[in-house]
Amino acid sequence: MDVLVPFDARTPKTRLSPSLDAAERHDFAVAMLRDVLATVRAGGHDPSVLATETVDCDAPVAVADRPLTPTVNDALDARSRPVAVVMADLPLVSADALERLFAPEAPVVLAPGVGGGTNALVVRTDDFHVDFHGVSVRDHRRIAGRSGISVDMVDSYRLAMDVDEPSDLAEVLLHGDGHAASWLREAGFQVDATEGRVRVHRIEDSTPEQG
Amino acid sequence: MDVLVPFDARTPKTRLSPSLDAAERHDFAVAMLRDVLATVRAGGHDPSVLATETVDCDAPVAVADRPLTPTVNDALDARSRPVAVVMADLPLVSADALERLFAPEAPVVLAPGVGGGTNALVVRTDDFHVDFHGVSVRDHRRIAGRSGISVDMVDSYRLAMDVDEPSDLAEVLLHGDGHAASWLREAGFQVDATEGRVRVHRIEDSTPEQG
Image 1 (spheres, chains in turn orange, yellow):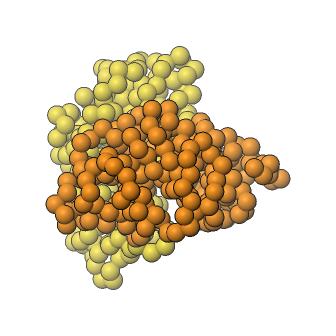
Image 2: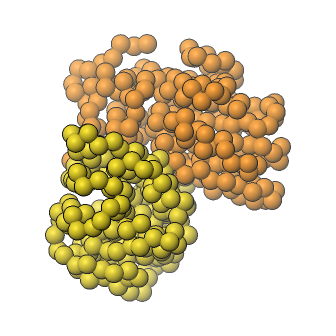
Image 3: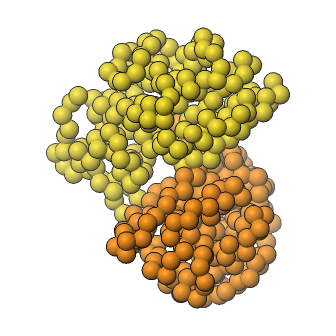
C-alpha cells in the first residue's frame, strides 16, 4: 500500500506545551513519526512523508509548507489508487491495526481518532477528498455520503489514540514500545496512578539530548 | 459466552458531575448498561449483571454492595470457564468488537481502556484474579505474568472508550447509536467543534424525564 504520512515539522504538537518545550515537542514528534514509518515498513508497505519542512527520517520526504487539507488532497490527486493516509502522531500503531485498515474493499475506509478526528484512511475512489478542519470523522462520512460512496470504519484503539495532549502521554508509556515511548522515559516521564485515569509526571531535570 | 457486567447502581459516574446531576448520572449510566447488554445479547451471548443495588434491565441481576474487585473475583470463582467481564460504561461497544474479544484462545484476553483501565477481559484459566485498583491493565498483565499465563490484547477503540469524564460524551454523540447517545441528545448535549478535540455543550433547560 502507498501510505502518505503528513508531518508538521515546523510547530508540531503545540498542545503538548504544558509538558514539553518547543525543541522537545519537535524531537518527540519526530520519534512518533519514526514509529509510524517503522510500522508501515514492517507490514511491507511504502511510506512517504508530506512535511512542512525537511525532516530526517527513513522515508522519502516531499516538502510543502501548506495546511494539512490541501497538502493531502493534492497528494491524493497525484497518486494512483488505493492510497492510504496515516497520521504521524500515532506511536501506538501496530502492523495488525494497519492490516485491518487496509483489508476492507470499501471505496473509503476511516479510522476515527479520539476527539472526532480522522487518524488514518484508505481511498480507492477518485470521488473523495479530505477535510481535516473541525470534526473530520463526521465530515468525511458526509463527504462520502454526498457522493454515494460507502464507508467502512476500522475499530482500533491503536489507530484512535493520537497524541495531542499531556494526558495522552500516559497511553504511550503504558502501551508503546518504540522510539516515542523510549523518548518519554528518557525525558523522565512516568505513569502516575492517582484517582481516575492515569496521568504522567516528570522527574525534575530530566532533559533528553536534543536530536 | 458467559458475560459478567459489573454495575455501580448507587453512585455511578461521579466524574461526570460537571455535566450531569446525580439523578441524571444514574439514568445515563443505566442507558449505557442497556446498550452493553443489548450488544452482548445481539452477539448471541449471555449477560448477567453484578450490581451494588437492584437495577431495572434486561438481564439477571445479582446484587452485592461491595467494591468492584472482590465482586468480580467472587463471581469468577463461582463460574465455569470461559467467562468474560465487560464493563457497563462502554456504550460504543459493538458485536464485532466483542467477537474479537472472545475469539483468541489465550488463557487471558484483555481490552485496555483509555487511561490505563481494563474495560473487558476473558478468562479461560483458574489461575488468574482481577485487581481494578490503579493502572489495572498493567496490573493484570503482571498478575498473569507471575503465574506464567499468556495474555492477548484486543485492539478496539469501541472497547477502549469507557465514559468517565465530560469530554467522553462527545465520543458517544459522534459514534453511538443506542440508548446512551439518545439520552444525551434528549438531554440537550451537542458536539462542539472548537480548537483541538471536540467537546460537548448543553442547551439550557434540556432536562430529560427522570426514569
